[in-house]
Image (tube, rainbow, N blue to C red; front, side, top):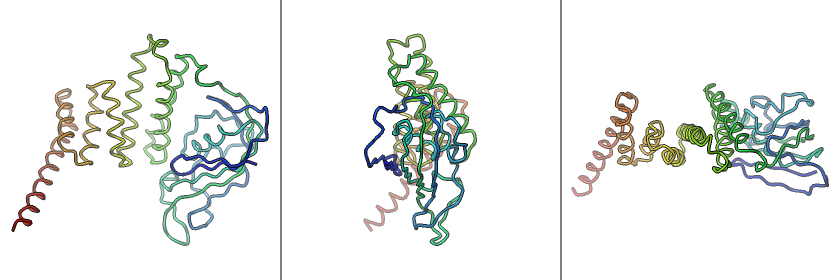
Length: 298
């Protein structure tokens, strides 16, 4: 039996060899049924945890059919990765290490230590491939676009839930949408080229918003910069990049973006108010610097 381990940052480790020669491996958009046994959630200090982590795979009946890539919780997204590495009729031992933020919105604590921390799922999974799916290159440009649009819409519906758990799942769907969009060959998609750019910009903007909420400000700058390469007049991207750069104390760059956004939408109150925030931060830093210099030379 193979051991599949997925760590906190998505790192995958597989031990053991496949003894299922000739069995089908699931491809893109594959449909599978899974039977999960011996499920155990362990806190960092070894305590067994009961409940609290959302998972459709763990709740569903063994006969239920799942399409890989349609998971709506972080745990199920990582189980999807594990199942995509298995073959038809394989039984594997799966271990997934989840940081506490990927669990329920409540802070999950170990009964003994009183400290929050990572939680590890261990289980044994049997997978049956119902429909093998196809390699991504076999999908037409229109099919890829339709799949990307489905992921984007699923991400939006998840994000509207407002819970931290749903927002993390939404982030993964926006990333999935981008993955399918970038695989579309431009030469075969001239009729939908404009729509592709719009959806891609929306997804990158939503990815940037998630990074802002997670305080990953450098990643937010990177995502919004990708939006602005597609559409240099995107006010949302200018505003979000300004917010990220403000938190990184890049005030001049942030002010330039926010002023560009004001030119594009002079009636946008949120953007105008944030210009005041940036200038206030600048003045505060200048005062502190001046006070420090006076103290240094006295």
